[in-house]
Length: 447
Image 1 (cartoon, rainbow, N blue to C red):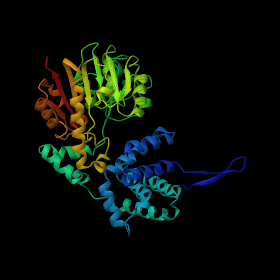
Image 2 (image 1 turned 90 degrees about the vertical axis):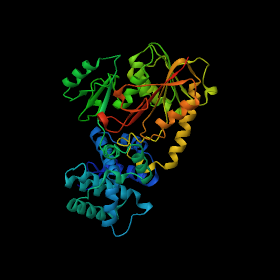
Image 3 (image 1 turned 135 degrees about the horizontal axis):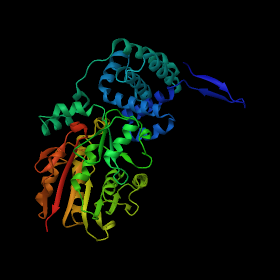
Image 4 (image 1 turned 30 degrees about the horizontal axis):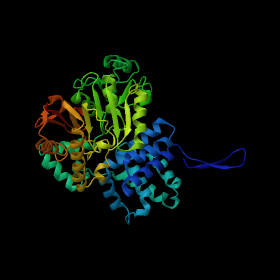
């Protein structure tokens, strides 16, 4: 179906697009920004998704972008074979549109006529009328010939590939494969409102298939994802979307009832909210270095109905003189800035943007935060260090070095339910128990 024009009662000409054209055009723009300008997929989607009114279109936009990024090496190879000359930087949106078209035919397996029609029209909507025929021809060739199979590791930069193989020689191939698979939808039940069993019953009544995760008391996995708006009482805070591995941070920290707790890198607030859902009497302080992200924390607290007495503050947690009032904390959560190598299935652009030198810089930040936050912890208190990384430089090695320079720190072993034993720490690898890759270390301040 082509675009058409119609007239309003005032004589103005309005372009009416065929169904799905805007979705494909937005997908092209998102992919162009991520692939061509080094932009974050999450940031670009946060701009693009609100432009679509229909939740089905928003879901399709996300699905196209994720599929295209996961298969980008295959699609780039096909473009190299099928185009007479490479696409230049000024044609980033055209490259994005072709990759969006490939994803629809290859991964999403949408009806070919609909995918081709809407994607070709999207070329015109993007101001590329002269390339619409090229888009049509390339997509028809993709429909006829299909795409080559690819090894999962082909999507990984060589330096990171080597590091994962060095750190996890027995698990590397599974890590590569699992990191390029779609992640399931995990929910965290707000126990201030429902028990998990009660909410499972609500889901069953709504016709939504769901499974309880025995390794964490509040976790529910949905084998088939649904829009969050369709979840019973989601807007009222009955449940939140949070990966199972991230939920286990609360299990690992497990502060005492009514404890004074610091969440040092709190935005967007999911882990802090989880702690408060488990114990509304916690005296919680939530910090984040980015003042713009504090609103996300407040929104999370407001929707879940917790945190009305929590202190939310913009501060560099490592500069304790700038924010600490001198009252020691019983428990500190340091969910540290990291490489995000454990959540590539949720952020496939990590493989595009991460550089080897980033790990050295991140390790220095992590060490600085550990040393600073240890000072605000009372004797006998607990600091939980966590990352969504799978690299030992950020995880086990970081903790080993901290213990070597901190005489009053002791590592307290964690339960097997949190993953592989890493010398008393725990590491879950991507896809294990359907969770993200995550690291946990529980440190106790010796009295």
